[in-house]
Length: 198
Image: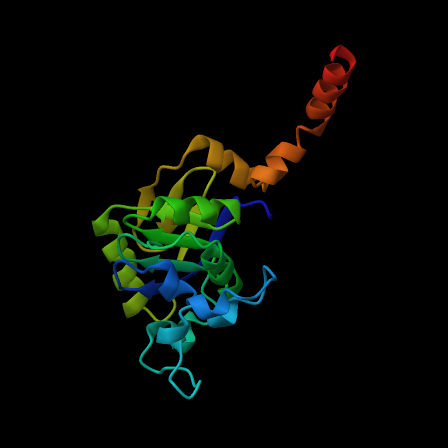
């Protein structure tokens, strides 16, 4: 997992509430055994027409959001089943940050285990970011994990909360397995003493 410190990127708006994991990555694509290759299927039912062509009415298909790294959406993002494929798909689609008024707990945890930062902001701040992303040709914000701030080049300057343990893990680029491996010497020492004792 890559370290996450600060990102300045284009914001893509998805003005929908209760976006669940089956909408993020539909169930028919969960048969893959790899952890990669899910990006092209993200938001599949909204993103493509029945003939496979891009849906011109789906906002994320607009050219100005093509290289977006930050997704802003409505409350309760990531609800539904606990599939880890959802953050995999969002990461491969190019997103490093998801901003919403609230997230499903399991989805939020899965995001942080995969280097994707979920940021909770007040509804009014989400609406402001959403409106600017829709109205402006290219709208960028800077998300600083170290300072826990989000700013833009107009007048946005807000703080966000994050669990200190998860913040530290993201800054160091460590998921739970990586954290365990970082304590390998202590684990080996414990195992050696245990063998000798028993």
